Image (cartoon, helix red, strand yellow):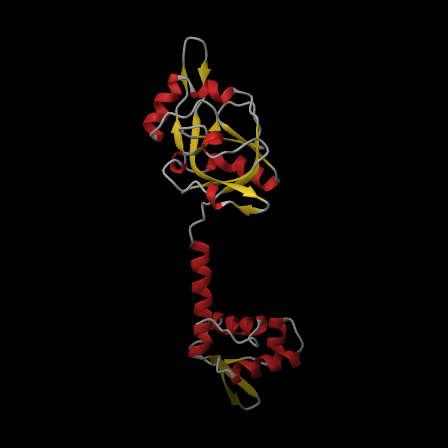
Length: 246
């Protein structure tokens, strides 16, 4: 159990670490308060108090040998360090939370979405890989803050559903990466629960990342099997939250 004592501080921790590092779990180490003051970078008076605190709370054991003290970690002192180690190890090795969200306002697009969503080379792959043919058009969301724009830039590093590029007799079309997402409308700073798309249609909403686009990282395009604006009564200027789903 990690220490909850408000009197336990960084200096106490440093002394425990020093004892463990130098074999003080199994052996008594001869260490003076002057040496402790160097370890914690504080006065000898403060060092003496730290040692008294640790001894009083049974985190170290001290025995006097002539004019010197030998000290070692007690089991309680060792448990404190082991708990800190376990906590750090768990935190460091914890998988990165893949939840990514964006905030922005709906804007009018250039009309490109309707064209690209109607191409057979894309439509067949969307149907096979996403389970639906997208409505011929995208919901365009303009991101408002820099950290959302940075997250949009980093989308390419996240797992995606890959739609391959293709050629027709006129030109070559680039790949598309799709990311499952949900949308909430933000009203007066609060989430409107009626807009939380936690239904079957919401599971079919995806963020698009295009190999070839005229948009920069400040704009996100979203597709669904139906018109997202019409289905969920959204309009230009509405503020929305887009949350990627793992």
